[in-house]
Image: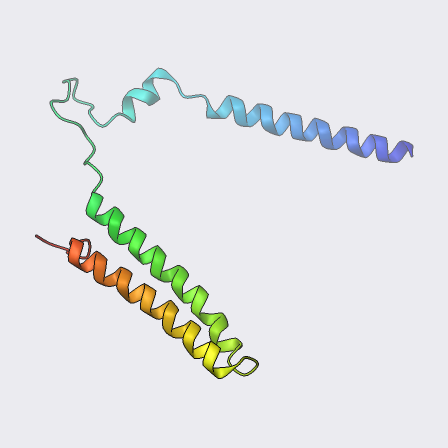
Length: 117
């Protein structure tokens, strides 16, 4: 029982030392903050150093995620083909794909799939 206490104590001391060393080493000095700024010449920037986020890219990414999840939802349909009623399976598959195609058509009409204007 005493050996478990000593091992736990040693592990806690090592953990504390590692956290203290990491905390000391992660402190940035004023010089480091100046060097990591986007402008080192001493002049104030006239415009932002960062470009605005493209809303079009965000919409394309969301559409990609929707159709990626759609693939994950279609895969179980293949697995249950042999153990289900063929009429119900066909109806469910058709309705699922129809809903996705209607959504794709709506996005196409709204212009969300346009890459360039």
